[in-house]
Length: 292
Image 1 (cartoon, rainbow, N blue to C red):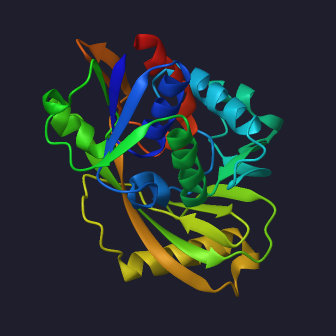
Image 2: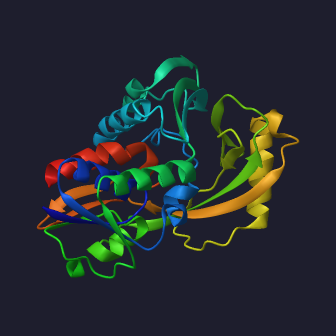
């Protein structure tokens, strides 16, 4: 079957990989290379939002974490321990079963999970997809109906809403700062003074964040926001006190009340992952392949 995957981020590439493995003739249509996608800005810490009203999230997370464990040779992936702070009365999230070394002490939930250096990993994944015979076209998709295929997969992230006539999809602006990695061997996530702080080490750099600005769609880094992120993350991880600031990046997450993954005629929609695309990609790709 001829399948066109619209979107070349982590979700689109994972879908293309699985569909090619299943024997389909696959084309990816994307505006730019993997380094130009929103996925490349992601911090790469593998766990979904603690509260997400979708029972599929735990299954998708389990599948994706399992795939990352099965890719020891893939660059940009390593497993490290860390912790998040959760409300004292909150139950353990369903996706926690996918993690290892789990413990809880009051509001601190600790576990080991994958950390993905997204630009490095996405470059490798695009090469793997190409090695399976997938062709890539670099252009803007303006209409799903114009794509010549038996089945179209709409994995265009933030553009997915407009292409599908779905007004529930909104941009969620995320700004992060990269600091030099002083040799951190764990990650951490906590809310400080009402704002989220996270420290995600990748060996050469640490992704420090961040913001979740619902409805804001500009990509220009804000210096004051960057400075506030650095202050919060240095408070969270004192070993970053003297770490050099390497740069600031901004991405627009595709925000939606829940992920849309369903087939409508010859179109399979797979968008609305918010900031969890890298966490849910392989699980979603399996479901897309089943829908084909």
